[in-house]
Image 1 (cartoon, one colour):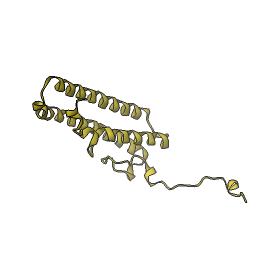
Image 2 (cartoon, helix red, strand yellow; image 1 turned 90 degrees about the vertical axis):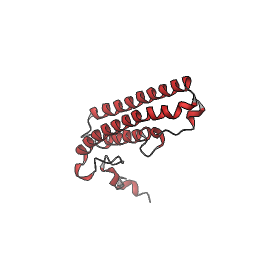
Image 3 (tube, helix red, strand yellow; image 1 turned 135 degrees about the horizontal axis):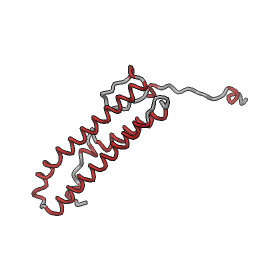
Image 4 (cartoon, helix red, strand yellow; image 1 turned 90 degrees about the horizontal axis):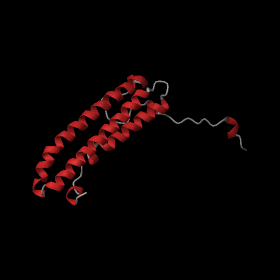
Length: 146
């Protein structure tokens, strides 16, 4: 990509609300729920998470195509105005995806442990495992090696 864009960090990739970073964490929460709460896990949740990934990917491609088109046909003098035009739609899309995740997460939380979690947070709290205590399941006979 053109050096005039490479040096500009993207809020989608580097801010504290970076969608590309967060969506990976969201998928981890979903997979943790799937693995440790198989009794309540719904395959539709996985399908919705994959759909969110596809939407983010497609929107990123659309944004990159717009940037490349701008770089090819406009001078640097128009970069700032282009970013002012493009950024609001990208941020609105990110908010929409985050809202869809919150709805999905609230469903997961309601199914796993509704009284122990805050469905409005973005943090990694989709499972009671965050308060897990390690338990040694080593058979007693294995401990008698002397």
